[in-house]
Length: 481
Image (cartoon, rainbow, N blue to C red):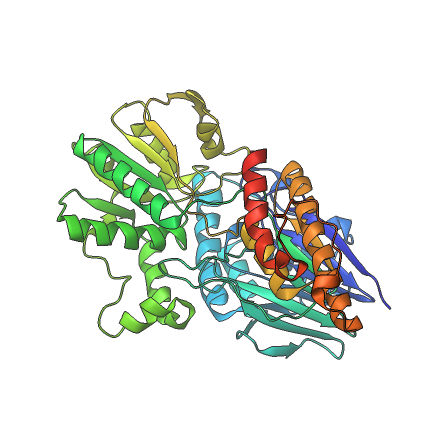
């Protein structure tokens, strides 16, 4: 039986530049092709020379892109048009529609504002996207006479997908980024019990168990309301698609209910395009939005208006959603520099920030930050309120229980946190193997003796242990934090 070899060209023990080369027998499959938000030099893109110097087409059988976030697709035009790859590229229909918009926006920032030269052009983005083959959920795609792929709903963002890849008798599942909890505009990730030889899972929040979403939303609304009531300005850095729509729906509903008149703005440009794609791909949203779509489109906001740069110095309270989400460039960074020195203002960070970004420095407690050779004093209040659409530790465990892999490989996370989660996953895999063995041997499950390092209640039977493991792991995590 052929072995599965995995080579991370990015995101092995880091968040950013996701690019995994999976080799099954003689077949080589590239899983995502992202850029790193924390670098502005050659480290921004994966080092493709590790695979081969020169054209990659003869060495890679296909490329699979899980979703449109730039840390998963940002290096794609660089690889296809500048390094050289002419083979097939697979992604879902929403990803194919939205990715080129984000790629072009990034190119404008890098080339037209920062003056970078070794970068792909608008024409290269278009040529790259011509190579893309769009796939539907649950569609079995035969790449060649050996490779077969199938996409599953991942939540996380519009069009996000996990991929089940088969080569002969061997198989793996690559999750990309996923969310096991439904939210206000997307459903939860779902996959068959496909029992792959290997599950490659993201682990951004490997040691986190999130609190109640309702409590988080209530706390978010309370903090925003208090800040604007006191005359302050609230900056919420977001990426144009995903958490942006989630939080817009939340604030729109609250503003309507409370009859508030304080202006809410969203950085113009990308948002209009983003919301048009949500309308176009409404079938990828959750049941509530699909049901109400005929009566009311949830993405047509009454209280949220396009933002103009001239508004930055306007007196009085306001709430602004601005891109990008990690404060590493663009409008969100410009607004932050203006508003940071004033105590009445507030910064709410709703998602993960990679090391090297201004967002990471602010969350680390920095009170003075060097930005463009200028020192910015940070006097505004800083709140980290995770509305991230990544699976937490409990969600990762749930996915493992759903698809029942033989082996698990963690990527897209921090090394120390991966080590901790590894022990919990080994417990679950041992438990599943034992139950499977009992089934095959025809033994009553209560006769099976299990070795489980996560303590279970004295009255816990093996038959119910798997159902209880997530709760035990949750408590275990809280003790460790």
